[in-house]
Image (cartoon, rainbow, N blue to C red; front, side, top):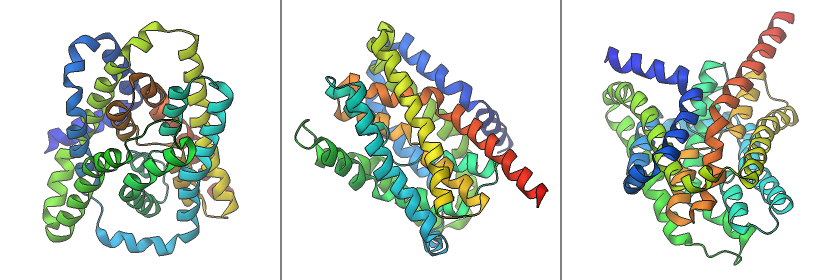
Length: 318
């Protein structure tokens, strides 16, 4: 077990560096990796199970402690950010429907489960994070197709039923199984978590690598279109973090809740987004989602450290 803990700590510290490397490996080795893309939903289902095993169903009741923060985060994730992504997509890519679709998908997927790691590291409110992640994950099969349908309508053909079932089996079913095991076999939780923690990080890197292989032809072209996508996704990702802070100020929450809101609004479950894009959309639509992996962990580390310093200064001043 000690070996798993050491590997997990190693991966946790180096995740911001390893995610762009995984993209690079996928792009450079796309011919060898493309045949394994079918494994992505299975890998992600295992990741969802391992990531959810530490959550107890009773923690759902904790939502009552943070009604305003909880509501504001969901509003930011699934109303405000999709609107911004949709508007910016129309302004920047007026004649590129698939890129706009990928951009909207990238900012319609649930908050990243890995945000819990950064929230724990930088002293955010872990209970609020768990509530948001759990509810956000369970609602994903409804929220993602609904968001795409509302903003795109009949402009693009969507397999909403297939997408709903795909997200259910990739995210909801394994998460619910983990919740049940936590409730009826609590002694299993720690061993599963210890073994699963490093494996989920490895799984995330593998998913990113495989999905990057699908979008490899577009990455290898390295034209101005790709550069504009990178800049657009980066701007929206940064906006997500600031939106979380603004919503925290509107709700007049404490610093720990504000930290959680910032990271929850800023991070996205890139793995599930990429898996959906690969299965249900043409390769070019995966680009905005894959691009998000290049700097998501780096931004989380930067914003978390920045806010942690402000929290420390405010506590010291008090």
